[in-house]
Image (cartoon, protein in one colour):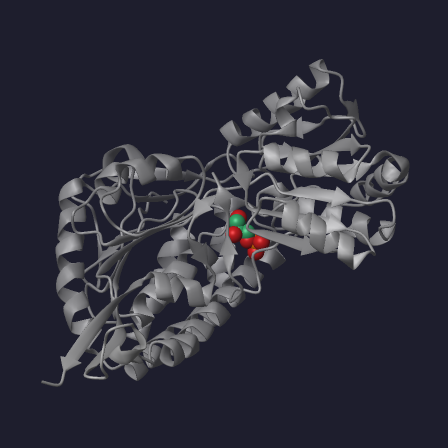
Length: 478
Ligand code: G3H
């Protein structure tokens, strides 16, 4: 109907002075579903100024009051789960039930953050001087945590609500202001989520949400002198941001090539269930998806058959019908996936199913006998296509895993717990799951990537700490 969703600044919903908008294309219909404002650099400057002012007062607001508002926002968010989930279905083709789960998980995350915040920020530290050589006990140090200032949050399309609140919650409880730049696909869901924070009654200017073209406001935001911390989840853009950002703490999560190493003694049904869930839920569009299976040759045939049988039962179709496999987020994403598939075909991979694509919808595909010279052995398709590499030794599997430029998560399947721990220690990744598929949650667990997979560690507690600074009051008795 031509409506353009407003952006959120200074506690109000506003129309951009640019007179321009950005279209959000529904991945299923491939038609424009919504439009959001194309904010200008001048509008970003205003948002930054307002955030700076609001943050000063917010930092002085008692911790328990900050927590109270976050609990309120969490409850409102859950009340609004249906309309927000509907946006997720239309903007990013997330299956209907998963879309609702994302919103509920987000409400839980915000509540937990409020509780965790009052505990860990409610504690300081007292140090005495005489534990260091040469000192008498004549000096005390009171050390406590203070906010950084203005946090810039940039979540990705695949969790536009959950990976936004995982940045917003910790920033706010710690006394920071928050500027959100949502992904284009998922921007309306994010705006609706911000509306829940608005309804909860946070002070004006403390939270803002600017939408627009990356080319116009992307670098401008990340290089803005008013930003004191950047929390980003997404792809390669994060590497570019880390090079351009100023001297501010960065929290980055930039994808992965999570390996699933399967040993001969593994429970094959458990392996199968986790390969299908890990590799194909939300059509493989998760940074923690299983992205390469490294399986011992002797059990490979059996597992490939089992996985094939399970894949045949997946429902492929629209997110509204709660299909398991839904259209990938954009046409260019589908083209990228297709290019990886075609490269593997040319180089002789075995197709366990026929490759099938209609628009952005790609049918689940398992590629067997993948070799290291194929792009799909190393690149992340972010789609429902999974390569299987057959290995003859555990070392071969570990070697492939560690040769990747990514190091987010990985998993190992074996009944021998000693072996599992040894392999897990040898894998250069932020987390190794033993006998289950990679996953970020539960959301209070530390979550981090090595190498090109990221900077810093997330999870509720780590994010709160990361968005604070330690300051001392030191007292000398003379
Ligand atoms: O896409 C990246 C997310 O952090 C993965 O989260 O493991 O809960 O799907 P998830």
